[in-house]
Length: 498
Image (cartoon, rainbow, N blue to C red):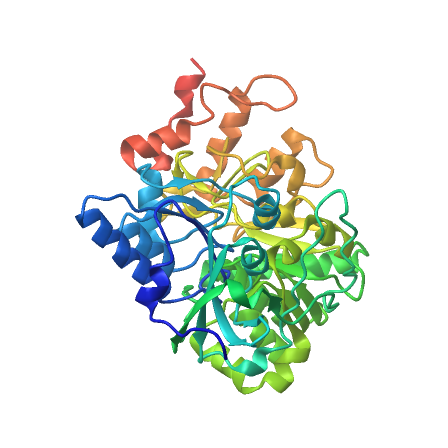
C-alpha cells in the first residue's frame, strides 16, 4: 500500500488544540483503541508546559474507557456529544468541566453535514481492511464513520487485525442526500441493502495507519435476575396477547430493543414464549441475546449499527461468518435510527426508563433532574415513531428506597404523547386511548410497587382539578424526601392537605 504506517504517538501529532474530532464506532464496538490514549498523553504534556489542549469529541454513541475515559482524565475534552457512559466523563460533565450536549443519535450525522456543529478537523476510524483506492472496511460498529470521513480534513486509521477482512459485506453504508435533494430511504424490510459494503474516502486524506491487535469486550451487563426476568415475561406476554387480539400481525413485526440487562432479559423471554413467532430485529445495538436467538432460529434477521456483544460471542460470529453474514447488517446510525424507517417498518420499540411518572412521562437521562446519567441515545428516535412504544423499568431502586414511578418526573425526555405501554416487574400499564387520570390509575394499579401505591393514590386526591391533576406543591415531594432522608418511603403527603 502507498499509505504510511505510523505509531499512535505520531498519529496523535496530527491532532491539535481546539480540533473537532470524529470517531468511528457505536458503544465500544468499532471504536479505535490506541490513538485517543496517545492524544491524552499529548494533552498532559501540553498542560505540563502550561499550554492549553482540549478537543471536541463526536462519536456514534458511548465509547468506553479507551476514548472517553483516557481523554477526560487528561482534561482533554472541551465539548462532547451525543452519548456517553463512562464514570469519569459523567463526573466531569456534572461538574461542568466538559460541555456535554445531549442529542438524538439519528440527528448527529446530518447536523454535522449541515454545518450546525462546526468543521470536523480529523476522523479516527477503526478498520478491518483498507484498499489502495480508499475503501475502508469497518469493524463491529459504524456510528457516524461515513459522515466524519467525508467531512474531515484528515483521516487516521487504526487497522485492527482482531477483526477479519472477511467482514467485507456485512456493512451497508449509505448517506442520504441533504435537503432539498433528499429522497425516501428505500428500505422496506429490515434485510434490504441500499448502500456499499465500505466507506469510500480520498486516499490522500489518510495521513497514517496505526496497526493494532486488540479485542474489545463490549458487553458488561449484569445477568438476568428475578426482577428483569419478570419484566421480560410481562413484555413477552403482552405482545403475545396483542397478536391474539389481532393488533399485531400474525407474522409479527420488527423489534427494536435498547441496550442493557433489561433489554437482554426481554429478548430472552420473547424467545422462550411459544406464542411469539420468529421475528426480525431493526435496532441500533445488537446484543448477545439477539445472536443467541438467531442461532436458535427465533430471530430471522438483525439490522443494527453495532455488534455490542461479549468477546466470546464476537469470536463465535467471526468463526462462522458463513452463517451470520446473510442474517446481519450494520448501518450508519442515521439509517439504523431513522424516524421515517421506524414508522414505515412498524417497529415495536422497547426502551428503558430511569424514572416514569404516573401520567406516562419518561425521564431517561437525569438523576433528580440535574445530574446527567448517560444521555437520551436513540430512544427518542424509536419511541416517537413506533407501532407500539414500550418503556420498561424496575418499580423500585436502592432496595425500595426509590420508587421509579413518581408523581412527576424531574426531567422529561419522552412525553406522555409518545408512550404506549409501561412495564415493570409488577405488571403492564396499557396507556393507549386513556386520559391523564385514567393513565395514572392504570399505572398505579399495574406498575407501582405495593409500598408506594397508597402514596400515589393520595397524590391524586390532593392534585388540582383539571385535565392533569397535579399538585405543584407536592409533585416533587418524594424526591425532596429522598434528598433529605435517603428513603422516599418516608414521604408524608398529609402536610400538603392542610
